Image (tube, rainbow, N blue to C red; front, side, top):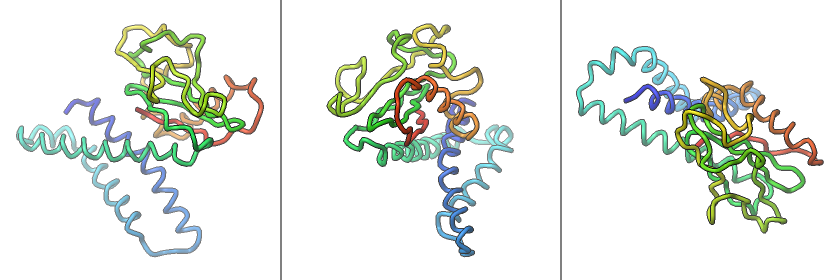
Length: 220
């Protein structure tokens, strides 16, 4: 397994741990000292993953080809489950008539709702660029004004952008790219980095009046 694949899976797991940690905190706040099955699962998985991460280099060198395939297949299954969990963030956002926008691979979407209008800005990771020019097209919209369909450069569906491997990042605005050594999952797994990306998007929407809600970052 490549280092990039392993890193992607572990960071994807971090997106779920934030949700589970919140549930644990709520239990402690109300004085519930018993452990729920969710809490036990989180503690078990986090402990196991931490142990694997610490000794991964030595461990993988001792695995057979078949054993390596088993690990890769298990991690791939876990990744699919966790990525599916990430998409649930769209289920409670307003307007609910809008379909979930598809976060492109090798990047993600930073989204927010203002005055019953959903705005999402596609972003690419370092080393990738948009398939179409987007310098003057920072974000896409879904609202009653768009008949609850996403404005997109792609015909049909809910894909807002595609990030292709590229040696230069010139198709989009400067803020449409994640910083060097800080891809979408790295940003998502750090609350401070995520807040910075969302705040930057707020500034780009400063001319749109109204309360901002349901802000989030979703990685592809």
